[in-house]
Image (tube, one colour):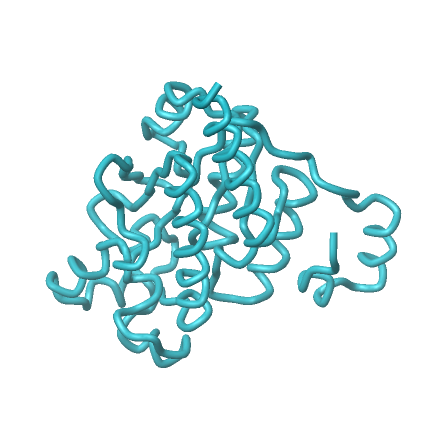
Length: 240
């Protein structure tokens, strides 16, 4: 695997440890993937494409332009999934696009100051990746997409063996969902360009951590090629 940006945060000890014990290669994905889009709503990117600190003036939980960049990449990932008949499941916070399970009192105060109209807009999934007919939308009340939701049952009903994740935040809801998915023995994937966070260090170190322990972190091109391979296999099966 090519050098990832997470290596920029390594100490000298970390570099040595990674050379000795770091993950070599990928675990690999199965034949029945599902694409999971996590918390991709306006409150985490804002209504306008602005750099993070400007966006935070209105949307305190915004990830700014880095979030929008990930949304744009997810458009390509989502198109590949739909083209190849890969099931898509959208995850969002219950009753709110605002991270209402946060422990930060400052963030909670900022959220309370928003008008109901703003909060309603913030909880809507971003237009570029919004669900279409036939795609499942699941609401959650905790960080993990699995906790207290029917996601596991939906995956079982789809006979899924692999869950490919995109969305936010890398260190929060994405990581929590990846850890739970791995615990349930799914092959977990994270598309590096399609996940985003509010702090760059948290983003990259959590990508590294997930890649080492719970998932394969792959590039967008790799994920699209994987979906194309699954789609081609489906077509061949139907023709036979």
